[in-house]
Image (cartoon, rainbow, N blue to C red; front, side, top):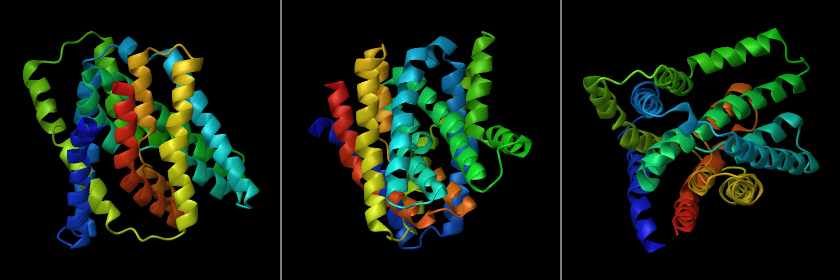
Length: 308
């Protein structure tokens, strides 16, 4: 356990450094926004394209893997929604809480950290988890809220979803990388080096941006946020482990990466969705803060388990 903790500690120390910089206002909120944009549109996109372009589709897409992750995540999603509804929450709030419990910070934290800690063979499974989260569950929350607000999902909703995918550089970079790989085109040496150099900025930049963005978050709706953090950090990886190791025939190495990805804290983009729709932004913000703080223990425990 201690050796794994020592390996994960530098990643969380970078988050702490960003938090401190934001807390003492060395990096103002607008500065955090620009750092995030650089990571999102350039560094992380370069990393994802390079991973996808150097992998075959078979190394990324595996049907039992997708089914296991979808089954476990959907069960969690439905369960958290049911608990929320039993507590008297509206359908919109219940859906946002479910999104909070299911959607992990795979892009900014999972891709940079897990590939380093678990090796380059983790890239394919991590990309698959990221793709399912963005395409399936980010679309699901939009459909549920659209339906709850009295409009049956129609052409406008489909257009919104399609534009969301097209404008998301992570989706675009993965798709372009897979197309490049599918055409069996070699990545020229200088291009590969350029992508590696730019992509290398994704890890420190993303972790620093996560910490700096947490500095401005207050603690409200603590009980709700604690429950959602527990669902994300404990229930999600537990359900994924059951599905991947005991129900679906997922290759053990890929199953371990899937469980590690499921143990990541709540994704920052859930707060963006909550703000956009005006649904429970305070509890989502607090859940991101709490789950990120405690993930140093849960992620380390999960990685120690799957590697041991």
